[in-house]
Length: 218
Image (cartoon, rainbow, N blue to C red; front, side, top):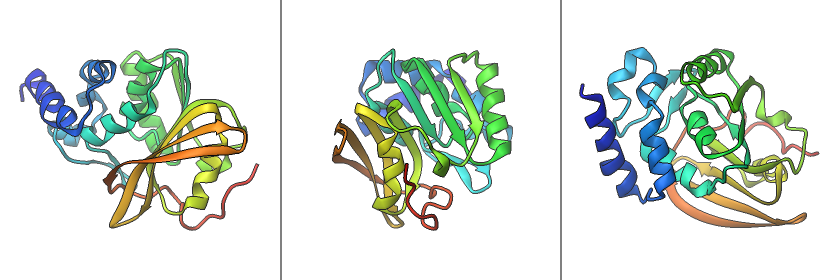
């Protein structure tokens, strides 16, 4: 495989055609070596318009979906970001290129270890990955941006992530159940008020226990 040709094709035929046009996001997806974050057995699919299995029912999302999610966060260089679902660490690395600090939670210990290894190999120093259940968030109002890269089944399940935002912060998540899911942007405009905007339709694996657990309360 001609890696650089495949990378350019990913940028032009997947990200750009899916309205990922922010130059900083495009530069980030060009610079972060996606092929190093894909499991070796699936390295040939690193730039394909397809999900890549990671084990435990989890996947690397399609590059176009990842690009739209990251672009929608509208990150700034001094932002503190919370990521739910580190996976292989690829999106974590992209967030770290665009923001000041990234805290990533991964439910499965083998995936957390994979992400830590991949981020170290890529020289990423401003991101940390912890093996942790995202339902255990305990610090409200801490983050400028939150990305949930799995589907939250019910609106009530979003509350813990909305509360984690600072006023002015942005939350991007995927809401709903198959076959109807949509990526949404939620902004915290005051201590008790949020706005919500639908961005695009998609389908991704569900957040672990998203449907089963009761809403988290601070």
